[in-house]
Length: 131
Image 1 (spheres, helix red, strand yellow):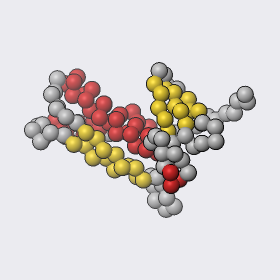
Image 2: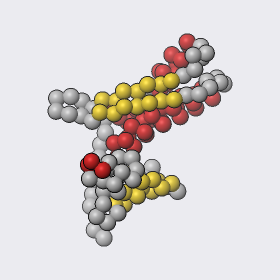
Image 3: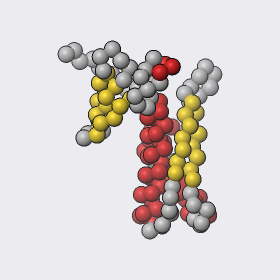
C-alpha cells in the first residue's frame, strides 16, 4: 500500500493520492489550517472506524448473516504526558441481531488490520530523497 501526500505551497493543506483515489487533509482554522479536509488524526480515527465496519461486514457475509445497518464511531485522544493514546470505539448493531452474532462480531472487530496495527509493534524506515 502506498499513499503520497503533497503540500500546497505555503499551506498546511495536503492533497493525498492513494492508488486512483484523491483526498484532502488539512488542519482546522484554530490550528493554522484552512479546514479544507479532515486532519491527519481525524483520518486515523476514520481509518479505524471504517476498517472495523468493513471487517465485521466481510465476516458476516462469509457466515451468511444478514446483519442490517452497522455503524462504528471512533473517538481518538492522542497521547499526552503520562497517558497513552486512547481510542474509544462504539459499534451500533441492530437490536434484532442474535446475542451470539453480536458477541462474535465484536471479537472480529478487534481483528481488523488497522486495529491490529495500532496495538502492535510498529517500525519506521525513513529516508530523504532530494528533488
